[in-house]
Length: 150
Image 1 (tube, rainbow, N blue to C red):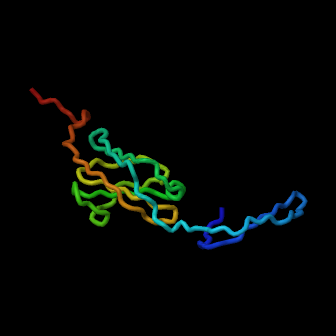
Image 2 (cartoon, helix red, strand yellow):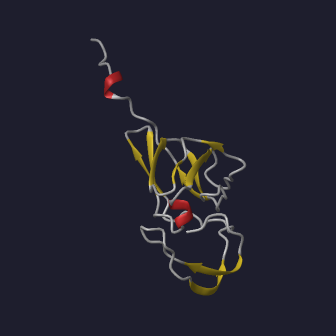
Image 3 (cartoon, helix red, strand yellow):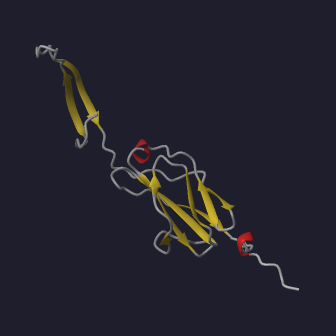
């Protein structure tokens, strides 16, 4: 693996060195095209949400297909109060970003649209995926329930 090589055509060669420091002859691989990883990552697929415990939203999605997201990338989340037409620009951050190799996140449960966006290891953002949620009224927690006095 060679990091930070500009896209182009290169001639690669390799040689070995033994324990005594003696080098072998060069072995060439001929010309090879190096393609850059400058394209944005693909969208997150399979995004779903499940309410848990009345105040928590468990977001899940498919494993991202891009190795550049899974190794060194991240998934970032935002929330908009609108149930439709939400955009990255009209939303606010919610929760912390997770590693790109993760396929679930726990966020506060709120009515509106949850947005998720992959970023590759270079920080290049991908398309936004979203899912609308209508959170029901939260039932009182048993810890706060007090029976009526008679």
